[in-house]
Image (cartoon, rainbow, N blue to C red; front, side):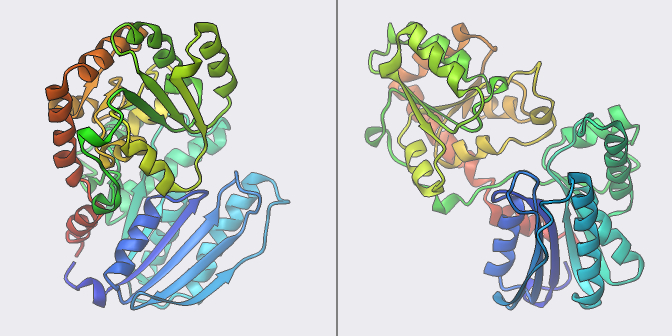
Amino acid sequence: MKKTLSQSTFVIVAHRFYPSIVDDLKRYLLDNRCAELWYVIHEFSTLKTRRSFYEHYRDGELVETHYGFDFSFVPDPFVNIKDFFYSMYWMLFKVPRGIDVFVGLGGFNALCGTLMRRIKKIRNVIFYTIDYVPVRFDNKLLNRLYHRIDRLEVETATETWNVSSRMAEGRERLGGLPQAKCDRQHVVPIGLWFEETPRYGLDEINRSELVFIGGVVEKHGVQVVIKAIPAILQKVAGFTFRIIGTGPYEGELKRLVEELGVQEHVIFEGGIPDQNVANEKLARAALAVAMYDRQADDYSYFADPGKLKTYLSAGLPILLTDLPHNAREIESRRCGRVLGYSEKDVAAVVIELMTDEAMLREYRENVLEYAREFDWGRIFESNLSRLP
């Protein structure tokens, strides 16, 4: 950008139901005291309330907050229409002309910025996209609309920020949108706040602990790890598998643990609302696991799974399948190992790393160097600097 952040004005519009990348962008802008920021949030369908609200900041300080009505009594498709009109109304009547950067998380939100740009109210529109999947909605009409708007925003936004390179590849292969034609797509990966996560040396952790964090669903492969435990215990007597998170598959996993007789070696933490507590538990483990099922998980194939950055931030080498776009890079940087989707592979690699102190130490040191590259400050600074 030609202007400094302290001279620049921003609008962020997003849907969310838990802290997301727009919260990290908001924090970066406020920490650097941007001139003004309008932060517009629409509550997601999983929340009890369906309100829209905005926060207005000037020189890093909150000066105004406004909440709309709760539309939780309205069917979901109509709530999405409500969200769009709230964004448009606030952009037209609350936000002044001449905004430097509009960031829309997802196509429907970015569309608002594109329309405002047409009437010269905004200079730059960033289409920030964290998901691209062939079937985003079960409703065929809604799914077609999703892809139409996605294509429109890629073609018209100042820049499209994809969290992985596979999104641009998917648009070309599945949607007929050539990357050469739409060359304003950039990879802006999920980041982390490197200096704020606790990490410990090899002599301060449980060198026999493997950890998982995330939704407990079948496609995340936690059951594959549990099935590997009897084999692991033959070589790593004190092995522990800690599961942080909850979900619909948790009951089935507990039955499997009892069936295998490994109750003393599996800890079900459930959900941990306090991220600081979760980070502390992660940092005390030796390794982390992310066993994505390639046959059941289209979303993670195109995306940049946030749990991998959570693991890297905690200094944890990752055992993962080759579904995520960066799986092979993690392996080539010796920050983790790519496995087949089988308990045999899990057991072999866990045993190898947990019984070889020198190798475990090397991998954990490599993880810290790799994780530094994803610090949010570095990511946002380098990508915002491209804007005219």
